[in-house]
Image 1 (tube, rainbow, N blue to C red):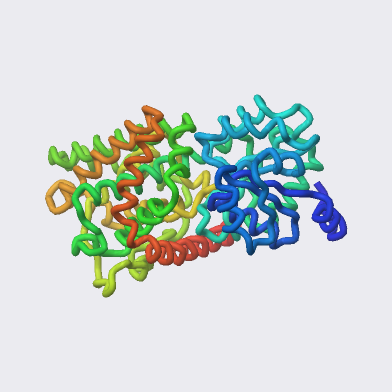
Image 2: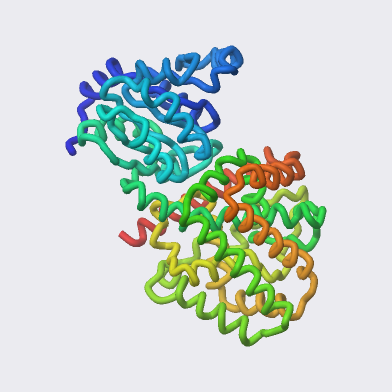
Length: 447
């Protein structure tokens, strides 16, 4: 499609209204970015909170309306920015009020139930173009992947949506809904399970890892900061992906299975069997023609040393079994996933986790050290046990499809770490910036 001219873009801004149903963190980010770029934006949150919402956004450039019916009636592009668990109910409620010929989209992390709701409840004259920014609301969208799904729409309408979304300065990735769900499961489900399990395990042992001498080193910094970053967000962001995406169920189940099987080999002292298994994993995930075999490592321990929550970060690092990292690579191997295939459509958290996992497997002698510690050193045995139990807990919750259980486990752990969220997010943003620079460098090397 040809690029729109400046005059055409100005004309669109004068004639088109953008509606956002749901002004949570991501809905607010979109509303602010769109209105700042000169688009006319209207939005709403829960109707019973209308007065409160009106006061909250009184200084913004966008307009607050009472409910989704009023937003839908006047908007040319309507974005449902709500939890995946509620998408069917909200589209059933507000979808029939959509303006004639409007374009409808959503921001949920799993598109199967979202698209199903659109097809079921929207008037046939509407078009469907869905979106998904692959980052959290605290991350600058510049340069981050933004998925665009032209499900039921004319090319002219898709060009309009691309024009609108360009103000986010994200990297557009065009996929089908099915492709989106498979890739997001591949890049996010296991990653989230690992970091969620870390948080629960630390809570179970009643320790703050940044205050404990054994959690020392750049890799530990990354694990701590990103786990806290996840728990600083809203529970439904992760529950939606894990519970509503069937592919994610298989991923989380495999992660729990890999964790349990590796831990079993560790406590049984089966050094040779553990090493043989992990060498197969290394060859499949990081060997052959994969990116890691042809380029410098994405991350290393020295680089991550500076991102510490400790007041006076100690030098060096503490040897660790790194069960959480070994298990994620083992999961990729058993699921047949090569993570580098999805790097263009990956979240910042995935890139960090890929980087530290790559470091463990591809740094000379590092994997051997992890295996030796796992077999011969009992320092982390209790932590690894609690981590294994936590991974099993999350797998059970997700397989049951129970949002309330998910919320309870998440919020209890969230409250345990809440006092460190602000500092961890600041450090996490610095880490993400570092990762993006490394990814950009790799892309330049490969062209």
